[in-house]
Each structure stands twice: as structure tokens, then as C-alpha cells.
Length: 271
Image (cartoon, rainbow, N blue to C red; front, side):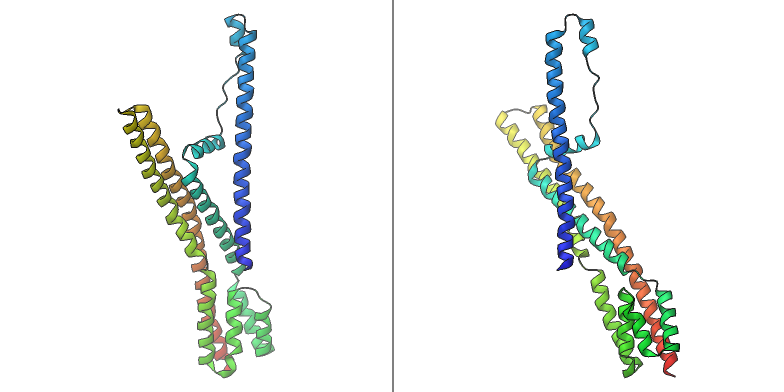
């Protein structure tokens, strides 16, 4: 439940940040438009000669990247662009939560094996279990389960390590399937918006009775914007997905290697 709340909290923060950025940019655009309109009226009223009008003319300001992005987002339509934005926010929230969890789950397995070896040599099984209890991460949890079952024999300890290792692997891979869903969903929504936009463009041509290049070009441009944004969202989430999968594979490999070392230690000190 705490992880669900953390995902929702991160998604809410990202959504509020995006909304505030768009609102601020929209307000800045409106203000700049009003100022420009006021300056134009003032120039028209006060300009007496072409030379004075030329001096009063302000230099054109190039739109920023955020302003262009906001304009393209609005042109694409709120129906599909909004859904694509929600997919991006939720996907980033899951990716950030997974990356934080995996970073906290990373353990120096060689150091842990050395501590368990030293504890088994000096204090026995209870000391080794105490070392695992005080160490965070899935590897320490697997070690604790193996040590706890070691009194029943090496085979029981090995089965406990394998079984609990599968549980920890499932926790590491949790919510990754949702991230892959958003990766596939974003471009599909973009393509759907493109198809619907093309249908609207052809409807406009049918109503007009002839092919107007302005109508066709405008409709196609709006239709293709949803595909562009969907592909961009899929690319961003795919990068995070690959990072998470690589991190999970690294932790799983360390878990398997450390589990073999633990069984070797149990065999060593059972003699």
C-alpha cells in the first residue's frame, strides 16, 4: 500500500508540475500578446513618420522550446494528447519508484559474504543470522532464510534459499509490466489520434466540396502531432525500462552468486 501511495504521490507531483509549467507559459504568452497589442496601438497613434515607426518597432522575440511544445500540444487536441501526457506521467512515476527501490535493494554481496563467514567462524549460526538481520536488501533476507533452515540440513537450507530468492525476484520486478504497458500504449494512442484526425480532415474536405490545401495541410499536421508525442513518450519510457531491467538483472546475478557462496559456507562449517 505504501508503494502505491508513493507512485500516486510522484505522479501527482509530476502532473502538477507540468500543469503549472503550461499555465505559467500560457499566462506569459497572453501577457506578451497583450503587451505587443498595446505597443502596436501606441505606435500607430504616435507614429508620425516612417522613420519614427521604424525606431519604435521592437525586435521579434523567438519562442522558447517550452512555448513551442505547449503550442504543439494544444494543436494536437486535448482528447488524445491529454491521455498521452497521463501515460508519460504515470510511467515516469513507476520508473522513478522502481529505480529508488532497486538502488535501496543493492547490496555489497562480497562484503556480506565475508561478514557471514566471519560470524559463523566466531559466533556460530546466531551471530550470522544477526548480521543478516541488520543488513538491508534482498540478499541479506535470502541469507537469513537459508541460515534459519540450516539446522534441518543443507538440502533444506538450499530449498529455502531458492524459494525465497524467487519471492525477492518477484518484488524486484514488481510494476515493470505496467511500465511496458505505457510504452506500448503511448504510440498506439498517437496512431489512433492520427487516424481520427485524418478522418476529420476528409470530413472537412467533403463539407467544403473541393480540396483546399490549407484545410488538408492543417488537418494532417494536427493528426500527425499525436503520433509524434506518442513516439516521444514511448522513447522516454523505453530508456527508463531498459535501465530498470538491467538493474534487476544485475541484482539477480549477485543474488545467485551470493546464494552459492552461502551454501558453500554452510557446507564448510557443518563439517
